[in-house]
Image (tube, rainbow, N blue to C red; front, side):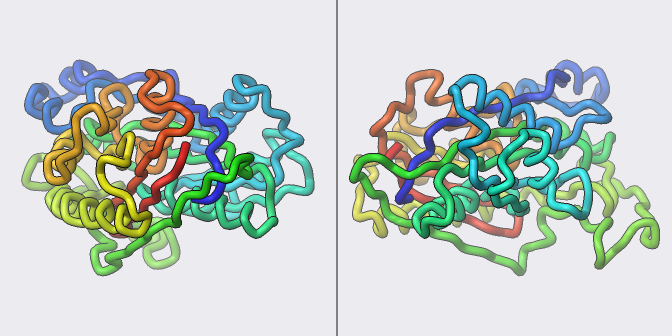
Length: 336
């Protein structure tokens, strides 16, 4: 990454579902075992009338206020989300209006799930390097709870809602990092999917009959579905390859990296990656306990919380890696 992440802010909906809340709703839930595997103790959930656009605006306003950033300085907005208020127009245009950004400002949406922040950084980096923008507002926002079946206890235990806002701007110093690496295993597209609701399977033409999986979770094709075992195998295979390829591309060793921030899928995946790559515990960032898996927002949340806790300081060398929906993966090494 040639440019720099200047500031990050996170917003979490006020509504909180603790593990005890889920236990009360699902008395047969093996809470202790589930908590150990997921690493999640609570997650924030959007209210009924609260959308990914609403929490995105709150994240951006928090960013502007806390870092004394003028909305007039923003000349591009990139919105990453699987949701949004409408099929068209792009939600970035709605956010543009709500934030009162200048007219001379580009705006678009993209949907890339767990690798979304990496893709967003790459796009922002390219726009700035090509002199097409100066200060880019990159927003990730997911209200994934709205897509999960109410009786799908496993996914409700893993996922949470959140939004993040980052300012990407031109680097003042002469520090330059290497590029990004991306990959896709499109043949596995249906392993994390919401099948019904767009052009291929439009509603209400296609009905959403409920089904129950082997673990007693209820789902249908209009709700979020994830093949957990496939996702686990994919993650622990592709993420180490991605890390090794990034190190090779940047001509660095594991010792040169100050911290590793992966997509915060769940505790067991992160711990497995740490062991496979021999990452010291103090360099492996795990920030999932209080938020759950927030999809495209997990990496910026983990980075922001690491900054707050003093784990990441300016000048640090950070490896960022995302993997998931698609199946896609992507990563970069940057000087923070």
